[in-house]
Image (cartoon, rainbow, N blue to C red; front, side, top):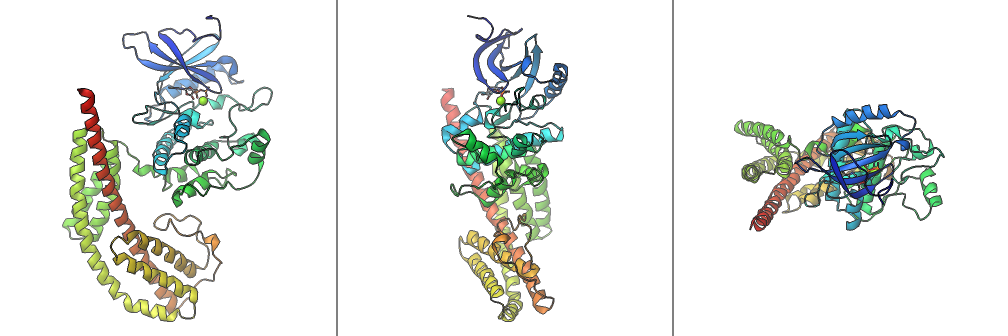
Length: 497
Ligand code: ADP
Ligand code: MG
């Protein structure tokens, strides 16, 4: 029974038990350390003969480097051993299964959940990228979950693919081409950028339930990989514009036009800066100190803006904090800042309104001068509709959408050319300029000056409004967190009894 290939192999110091899974190159077993700690680990057995020409020694050196890597979202390599046939990697055990199973038992993931996972994956990739390590075999099966209660991504199976060609001796592709960048399959020449393509496929699968090249037959799959067609995103489920933008830019067939690593890490949908981390609280605190200072100096607008920026870090800080007492203390403070920000908002709004009234005569003049240009007139109408909406209770979201729409048009009329297809904040939701006919730039003169000033006013309003909306969301999120916290403590008190 226990001949080669049957049952788990033997390994010094460990008792190997059930098979956890097997992938392209290896079989992974659950195991216990024989030492008194009885620590649970996962042991990956890689057959030496599956390695290509690169020497096994090279690989062992590499593993030594990987052993030094420690990151919250990377499966930790604790140790390794080898014998004549195999290399054994002793890894941290992940009890939550892999991302593939997680997605498919839920069919699709809501955008919010996908985003948290994507942030975790991005932070792992950023860490590796800074150390010049590529993964080259990113797919949901290689992304594990720490546990199912509080799922937490752990990137697995990296640093290895560099030693194994995706083609075996018979030129047959190993692994799944569903996740491989087209240049990897077609040109056989590729670099680290293939990882970004795979991230796009994983995100696509998480949101739409299957990868973009899902096919019924191999010939259909091959056709899809080799085609030049732009990857089309399904219309449903409804997703944010930022999320669609990221997908489209990751799933760019030409690696030189694909989003860069830096732009990926900084993309507003990923927003690594605001990911819950050990630094969130310190950053929030720095900003709140500045806010209080501005507030004392009587600069209400600057103070408000700083409070809002601080809240953007307090919410992730609360998500990160595990100690209930500390969590409560932060929450109480956040409550105070939110109240002060609400007061400041009232002060700032009333002075804004006064400013807005001051601008009325210039605005009327501009409108008068726009009579012979219906497109300009229409855009100015949209802007006034936005201002009117702003005064309505609960009209902030609508006002913001109108501002963004109106500003998109006005900027186009002012510049006369298509702005870059993706403008970062505050104009992230502008309609795609490609959909609009090109227009000539507004010629120099009084009308251009007035238009320029008006655009700046409107941009400031939109920016301010956006901060307000965000502040409300942060506040709301901090409150829901409260309820979660409550249910958590109820649950733990139940298990104690
Ligand atoms: P391969 O190089 O052969 O693809 P992987 O490292 O991806 O090997 O592991 C194969 C499978 O084994 C994974 O998809 C996962 O289901 C399981 N597995 C791997 N590592 C662990 C781990 N640390 N904890 C739990 N399960 C694991
Ligand atoms: Mg694998």
